[in-house]
Length: 291
Ligand code: NAD
Image 1 (tube, rainbow, N blue to C red):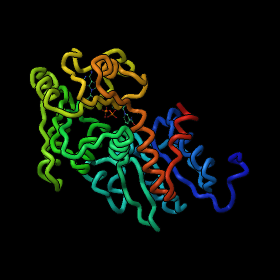
Image 2: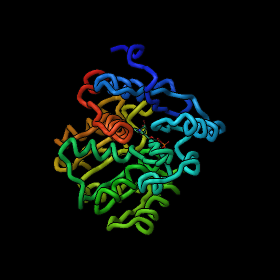
Image 3: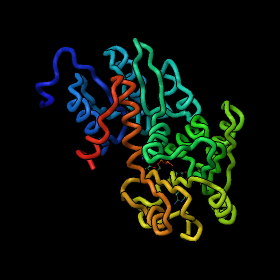
């Protein structure tokens, strides 16, 4: 069925706010899923900077959108404009999905949820495990907070000495002092290679949540040598272009299970889709169509 035939007087609108927006895969992913399941929804991207955000949210409320995704630079700025924050959004201080529940706008962060659903799809149970996490930006923060919510036992966060290091410290304070549960978070400087090596050796999972490995840093990895890895270690990367980063190549060379960021991207969308429609996204269909 074409979109033209599908859209009628009852079609529900799902939005996306961000700028720049044109590169986003979300409109294609959601619209092909609505079509495949015969759901009367349409997903539209809107170029929105932070100055326009309040008006846009007011407009979305007035038009009674079923929900929307939020991307950069709006993910943090939108927090005070929403009615209710789930733990993932509140503790990460960022929102990527909003559900309109009878006029109440509820904020979620499905980036972290998507990352852990991707691990689950790869038969990995993270309860009681130790993770070494590289990075403290948007993706890393969502993963760190969701790790604590998922029952991870310990998380060691490494960030280089840049403007994100404070955020790494802040994320550990949130996990250790503000969140319920037993997860312990530690923070280290990425420049401290000896500690990085020790923490990787003591971990079940190593996660790269920095852009190192994708353009313009393609071919680079924050782990200097495959000898730092061992076959039992699970190595994952949030990067999905290229599908196999230098880190994942190194991981495979020593026999580790290696997981790229494609699953995180798909499953963050699937989690949002489920919130809006109450139905599961046809993930296999989307994978076949898009990748
Ligand atoms: P960000 O700008 O918020 O954070 C960047 C992080 O990378 C910081 O921790 C920074 O210190 C670190 N960093 C940057 N350059 C570095 C270098 N040369 N050496 C060491 N550390 C470095 O970015 P973000 O939004 O968190 O995105 C990070 C990566 O995650 C990007 O590659 C992005 O494409 C990817 N991502 C993937 C998904 C997914 O669904 N798979 C979702 C979001 C982001």
